[in-house]
Amino acid sequence: MATQTSDKLNIANEMLQFDRKNRAFFDELTEEEQKKFSPFLMVRWGADVQGSAELQAYYLMSTNERLNKNFFDISTKDHKKFQWLLATTVSPGMGKQYHKWLAAKKKTSDNKAERFLAALYPHMRDDDIKLLAELNSKDDLKQLAKEHGWDDKRIKSEL
Image 1 (tube, rainbow, N blue to C red):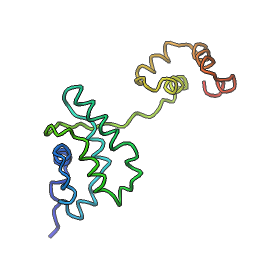
Image 2 (spheres, rainbow, N blue to C red):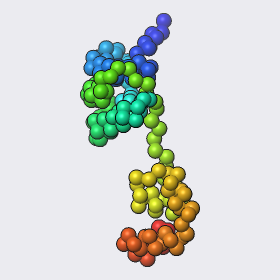
Image 3 (cartoon, rainbow, N blue to C red):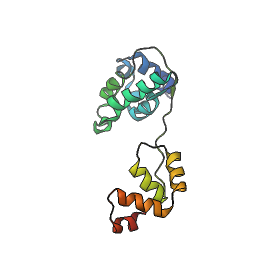
């Protein structure tokens, strides 16, 4: 008779434990469940919530500060419990939240002008970069590169 995995590792339950700051959750998992537990998935789901702009900003900034910085420098294989304990510090303790998947950033464009502008203005959204690239001629972008200290050789190779 095959053993059936419990429902503890569904993302809804994990986020409930995350919001409840349940520090015992990882210890309550079986050895098999602990092996299957994914800190990466927990971070991607935990960073984004539905709610006020302030609550969304809090979760995102808290996750970035406490989990994203150097989080995976800690061996996932050997320190999942420690990663879980760090994750329990994210929630402000305001009860269950509706968490959404936070997709990874899209890969950079193959368009040289867009890559140049994205490097120059990393805070801009992708669609704004694309529009800026469309609105400016190649000569405009070359002039902008010169204004930022690029030499002719670099401009020729990268633009």
